[in-house]
Structures are given as structure tokens and as C-alpha cells.
Length: 259
Image (cartoon, rainbow, N blue to C red; front, side):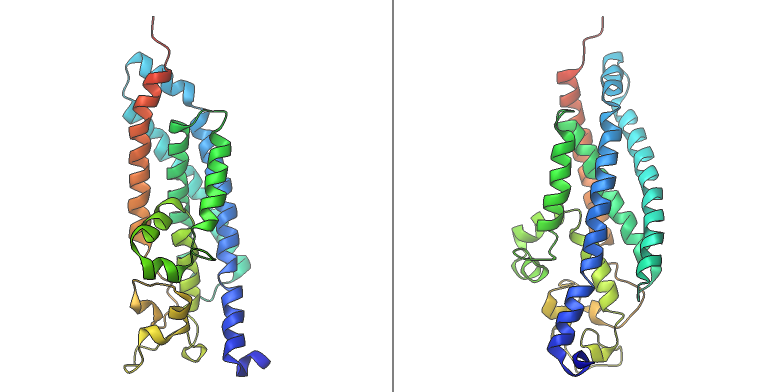
């Protein structure tokens, strides 16, 4: 019971336990879903060439595959979210788990749509696996050298790069903040609605660097944290747009001329 009377020990304990779970679950799910989705698109590569050679609309074909793949993996991720929340038994809302797991799937599948369009079939699994593992961890903000506090304080290029190339960037923070803001006020992480004289940057959540653009995140609530929903959706759409843009020149270069 020593940590109850020692704020520094309590701080270290919470900092080591809460963020690690979403980081581990997220990176495993990101790699599995990403590589599976990549293989789904790669296996249809010859169909892309056939459609292009026959003069059919490649955009419609891409949208169809994109829709089916996203839907398929979203269902799989929802099942994973159910078991994750059941095993973890989070103190925050279970709904936040389902939402952020779906957003992770949305962003992961988007990147999985892009790599088969710009990489050869022999290297796409290697490139995608390296991207999801390396960029997902290094630029997630969960540990040095690019931590959340540095991301929000420096902003600019650091924040843009971390948000764009790390599928884990928003997932890990969203789950962790949702857990932190459900802790009681005496933990040092939250402020009650009736508290008027305490500043948001005086909490431990601020010291850890979480939710740098949303000062209301320190207000006590067990409903989860959803600031990152819109950025993830927009990034997912943009990466898909890049994929469909890369599809046309890559397909035209490699298609077999029709007789």
C-alpha cells in the first residue's frame, strides 16, 4: 500500500500499466489486419490488369474491393474489441473500445490498399510489415524519442509526420486518455466539473503529454475520449485517395496489351 502515500510511485505505476495494453494490442492487431488486407489486394492484382486491359472502370473496381475489404476487417476487429474489453475490463466505456478499434482498422486497411499499388508483389508483405511495425511503434508517441509531450509542444512537422505515418498514433493515445480521465480527482489525472480554480496543465495527464489539443480531456468522465476520431477518418480517406491515384500509373505500366 506504499504507493497510496507516495505520489511519485503512483505516477510511475499508472504510467507503466495503462498505456502498455493498448500499445501491445494495437500493434498486434495492426500488423495482422494490415498484412491480411494487403494480401487480399495483392491476390486481385491480375484482375486489376484484366479490367484495365478490357477498358472497364478501374475506379469502380477499386471502390468495390475497398468497401468489401474494409467491411470484412471491421467485423473481425469488432470481435477482437469484444474480447479485448472482456479481458481488460476497462474502467472507461466499452463503447470507446469498439469505436477506436474500428478506427484503427479503418486506417490500417487504408495503408494496406496503398502498398500493393506502389510495391511489387514480392516485396509488398515485407514493406507493409516493416511499415506497420516500425512506424507504428516509433512514431506512436508512446515512448522516446517521439513522445506525446514532444509531439504537442513542437507541433509542425513532428506532429504531422507522427499523425500521418503511424497507424498507432491516435489509437494508443485515445485508449490511454479514456482510461486516465475515468480515474478519480485525487489520482491527479482529472478535474471535476465543479473545480474552477485548477488549471488543466496542472494534472498528471498534462505532465505525460496526453491530449495536448483538448484541455477538456482532464475533466472527469468515463465515456471515453474521441478527439482523434475526425483526424483518423480524414487520414483514412486521404490514404485511400493516394492509393487510387497510384493505381492508374502502376496498372498502366504493368498491364498486358489486349489483342
